[in-house]
Length: 248
Image (cartoon, rainbow, N blue to C red; front, side, top):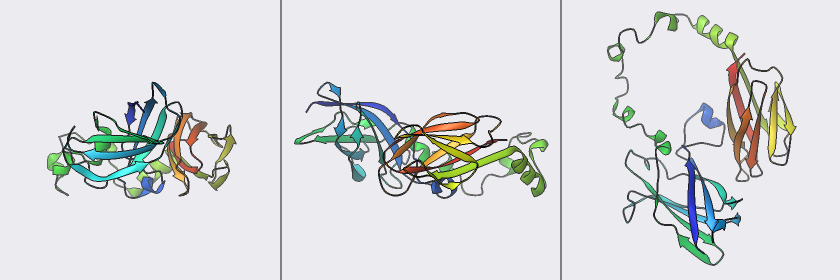
């Protein structure tokens, strides 16, 4: 089984639960790629074993091996990897990927270097700053204009309430809204959904998505967005949660 991996992108940590937007972070990140098997784009379910090392060959294993079974379509796959806290500490890291399909197993070579995105888990400069060490002495003169500072919480509250619109909701696997208000759902296919805002934003909002429910291995992607709606596509059977924040 001659296989070749074409790396598309390795995205930084993303917690599919919406609680990550409100609370503590995670050490997981999404890894996407394209697999060719025997000269053609692979399809179907493959077993992939991911190991993290501190060298391009030999070296030390970082964390534990992760085994996932993504279903490939036209060679494309998405999987979540979590090597635990401290895996990305600012030093170089490489992924070793072993592919199994039926009786055939092959370890891809060379290892794939993990480039900057997952290092959002570790800011090298920020890590050297002691808590509470930044005060007015570290700010350049005029760095913060008086007009950007409010002395009253009422003004800050007024700014957020008068200028921002927030819409959030939960859509189950059947495309039915089970939480939230201020929007409707249009099921455009078995995997795509369009969310229409009851009151459009005055400009494109920022939209964050996450998986809803613990069952399934669903990855939800934002396809398009506008002031009045956004569309998603899901690779899996779970629903999703969203929050849209933007100007009224």
